[in-house]
Length: 249
Length: 243
Image 1 (cartoon, rainbow over the protein chains, first blue to last red):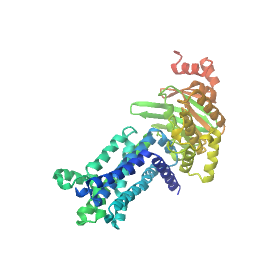
Image 2: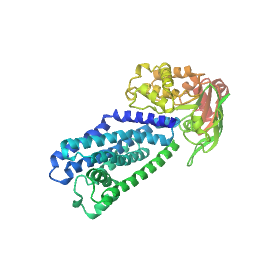
Image 3: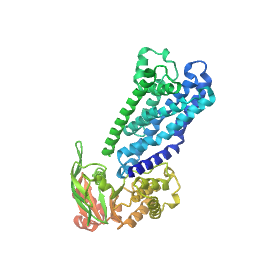
Image 4: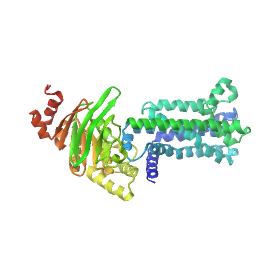
């Protein structure tokens, strides 16, 4: 019970820190929303990628990549300012800190998903369906992966380097997810690499969850299982590194 | 009664020995200053005593609780203000106190009481609604130290509390620390000699990870034949080969 109270206190503090940073809201909500509108109005009709039914889930996955930057930044800043050292002296355990950091970003991930799907539906009402609700909940899986990545990077990097390192993750989600170009235009080798990495799987999971699927395993379970494996691995590593850093303090 | 009993405490980092077999008793209710130049081992000692880092060998007992075997028990009795300011930047002063109280399992009533006490002791009422990041360095340091009082610790570690403060802010903080005397045991590390002279009941001098002297400032003067803490400190640290 006491542990729950401590986790709740950490979540409340982290949410306030994130929401009071206009830059984080701009990157996590405003910029992806602008991209959703811009890409749809400029390119729809020219390529399948920019139809709203593909674009909206892709944008959700892209926006969630920013969770890695802002969760990482929060931890890196706490570490550099000795705030985390102060918290280590409290009764809270390392697992409670990690849960506090992780859960504070889920409401933002949920909001991203709801907003980008709703705006997509307003622009193109044909995409409104029950599967939109399925996709919103499915989006918490890529969100968990990106939050875990942020916790790992924030435990490893300082506040100056975290921006650059997290940008690689965001660029990966943008360039390696097949959001902006059709997969047929890519070579077999490139596609194989994309299938192994988490980024295309994150976008595909939401797209297939949203659109339904024709090949039950290949189109839905495969990206789901690959992404779950990455999520478990990245969280396990994040917990190990965070605990190690905590002991080093 | 001893608040802290340190027995042969040692900390090694790879090939560097940061603290060499430190043994020391600190009495309940006293202000004890650890003096030393940079790298003397003061901060490492505080980190070991507060459970932030494990000793390589030896042990220390905080009201009988071992920092090695019962660091969670030790954490219930202590709090620390490290030399870097440690506040949540985008929370207000009041929210910082509320957050730290919640993290330590306090009820709403306890939180309100401790908040009022922090306002009174550190004069924080006028900045209670301001975001910590908008405060000056001096105010942020005050908030940082005030947070260490939230848990009502029996032992308070203050690591270089006035580092980087201007002379007025430093004097004001001295007054605050002096006012807290007797309410808890305070262990202060500093390399400002006048700070140790003004505040301490007893002084410990460290150099190269070793404790070279422990006693009151009068005992320090008597042992070195000097008339102030700075001269006496230099005499002890240089082994009489004064600069």
